[in-house]
Amino acid sequence: MSVLDRLLPSSADGPVVVEPMRRRHLSAMMPIERAAYPKPWSRGVFESELQQVRDGSRLYLVARRGRAVLGYAGVWIVPDPDGAHAHLTNVAVDPAHRRSGVATRLLVELAQRIIERGCVGWTLEVRMGSTGAQELYRRFGFVPAGVRKGYYEQGEDALVMWCHDIHTPEYAARLEALCAS
Picture (cartoon, rainbow, N blue to C red):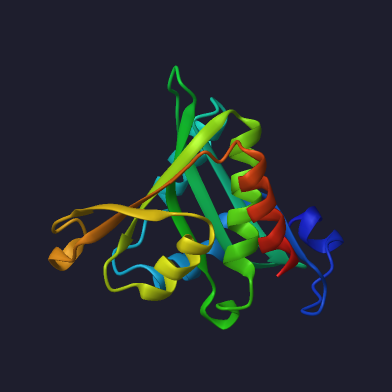
């Protein structure tokens, strides 16, 4: 147990805090990763992604209550002369905390931070069969833009979704409404 872990409350009733992902979070994240994905990322992949946070090309956040990690999300930021775009790499929530607003909190925080970094849109791939995730993304303004055939293991297709104009006052109002809900 780290010094920080001893100082943080362990209460299951405390507030949900969203903060930048750190290496110290990885041990608590890996069981969530394995529960969320049929072909989970390894700890080494996350370590590599966190190294790229330093150069500004990645952004990863965790949601936690006390010391318990409830979920995490990340983006790859792609520079563009007309405004950067972010590619949502992953969103995962502990099965015990799904449908409790954790993913919404993570996505709102990510959106706010990528907008601050000059992003004008973001994109993602989601499993065709993951209708719950698709509905979450639609609430954020994502719309279907195409299909990647056989994108996932076992040949499952991916629905490509885009959300444009995230730098506008209208999108800020959407995020505010999501926060209020």
